Length: 247
Image (tube, rainbow, N blue to C red; front, side, top):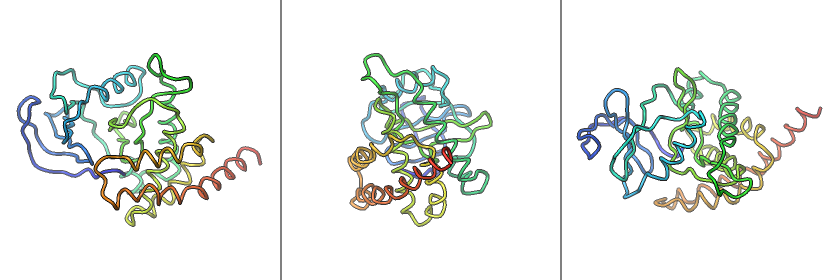
């Protein structure tokens, strides 16, 4: 919900010579086929992917579902990961293959599972590894189960910030007319599964989203507009949570 995945042509680059079909494009990177089993994610800016790869290796070492990294060396702004076949969760929601309640439960379970991964040594007390861009377009439904992609924003911090970031991204998507009906069903289901600390980190999530490099003026206004939608939805979710668990 932060960038479209679209097909394209071919390209050449430093990773093994020729890259194949352009199979995905987001705000900051393009993804090309690299043979039948791998894809190369190439950032358009001079970005070092070492930190992102380190987070992925740590998370993957604890069995979290993400694409396997192929050993390098690669160009500094590239990484090669296992190709995952399957639709995004967003696609499954759109086609009706997954209901809003099922999709929200899956997204919430992936966040909880990620936050059980031990953080790196020296992390502040209570901090965990965070994805910070976990939404239905970044979950692939492979035959073996869900796989989380796009770890560009990952880092260490309080879990509530991860939940708040996902909620805010979903609220931003609700402002897009083509996604509004879907998200209006999905977002309340997601919020009722969220921990109470989500509410404490909504402001931090908004400020973080507003600082994303390269936003247009229209895009920079989205987090604030989305933030304004969330308080009544969050209040309704807490009331529903209490009613369902303490009737």
